[in-house]
Length: 330
Image (cartoon, rainbow, N blue to C red; front, side, top):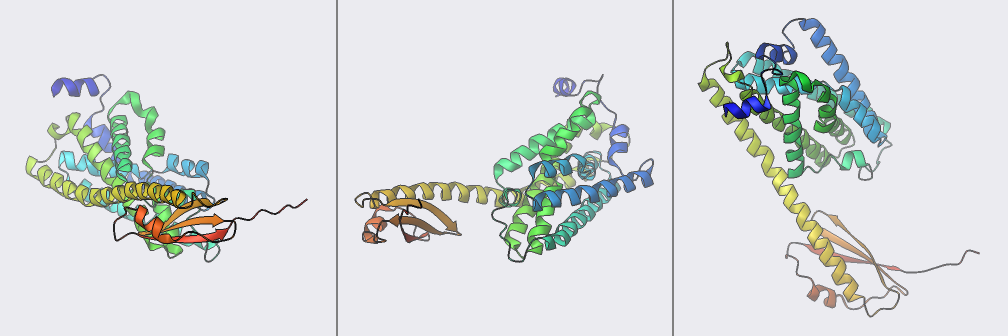
């Protein structure tokens, strides 16, 4: 373990625990300056993120990620767990909670720009953040590890903007506010779960890297019992977050598999109808709608399609039939 720690965090580049704590604790040193700077950049990043979400602009959202300071108190939670400082832990959690409220309120307030009844399902900035999966957790863990290494090594500070882009903390909160403002509570919950999974991933990754850096044995660190209790809490929270992500990933894979089956079966069902076409399959919950079109709007008996499908009984399939017509304009 010592050789691994030395390889990952060589003494020549390793930051001391006091240096890292100074960077992550908003109450040490110039506390007023740190707090004002944090709040200013948080509010600005929140406004930029929400504007980017409303405009469906990836470049604008990336700009918000770069200046978002939310990773500081989150990594502060990881450091507090390792060195066993309850006061730092509580302060960092409170800063994270306050940040959540601020950004969500910004998103909620700016959502009035959207026309009433606007569809959020066509906005890629929203749909990409409302259905988190296990791969998002994996990416967040890797990004959190990179961020923690950047805090612990003097030679890696240049990667922090890239880490800020990859971890995506403020944009999901902006999506929570926008979706809540439009009354889409399911999407708001999905975006909130994505944010929480990113937070927990960052805390876990930071705790691991800070432990490898030897901060748990540093002068001033608290007793082991406190850290074990804190690690247990993080473990429970991780399980709570992983379960819905795993469930959503499973459902996504199943929906994709069922979609392929429905599409293939529908094409086989219409194979004897000249000019027939299968348009696509859409889902609302566990209800699938397959859109087909024929020259005269008639289709074979649906029993043929039903017998070919091997879907579970709780999945329903509806056929929406249209007329395949072509008109010459000139």
